[in-house]
Length: 331
Image (cartoon, rainbow, N blue to C red; front, side, top):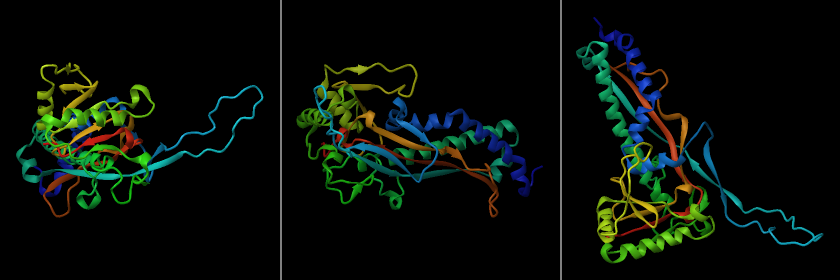
């Protein structure tokens, strides 16, 4: 019979192996990203990028044209003027974690491999729900939560009033007009103003060259605004059929100007985000991609329990704020 001093030896390897199997299979990752609409959308279309190091993430930004492009004839001299026109946005790493713990009473009350495995599956499901909550909340946040340890999400990327935030976003001054998003700040009654304002912000985000890649492909909002939008569009409302598999499986998509219109429980009240997926990436560190702590389950010196952590390290980024937009104060 296991004693308190031996639960680490008796149960630790089984718990560690079981959790490692779940993590290696991708089941926890699927559970996290498939339980929130924005996270699910980010995961689709290669919007989540795994990187293996660096103090911060660098994203190249083109902020002006190459002026040497010209027509010429025969032996005419060509322009070889040195060009800049490129700058860099830098995104810092943000770290999140959750603990998975099983106390001695639970372990001794669930003797046998099958019971221990079932108990741990319940603990893993609880941990996954907690991770969904902090990552999804962070993806919509302005990054100031928990003493600015939170992910710098959509609220930071897409300002209410472009260019008014003090300082910089991703290291680039917000006063730089090439680095400002689009916005409609006081929309008011959805029944009157939502569609025309939505159309304007969509077109503002589409400005510039780039063909299909320049157009927003996602409107994400709250349930109440989504229902208002659906009522305005009825009876010409159109849904994209649900795919049978893949990252977007299960999301019913209302369409507007070819872009998906969806709602997310974590979206800020009164807001519609207008997003272009070609210019949004979630960076995730390969060593903290919902990864278990080194050594697996360990026994704290002062507790009758076994504990490990699951780590996330990443951040949300854009390489073109002008292609992103927001409607605010919708009633």
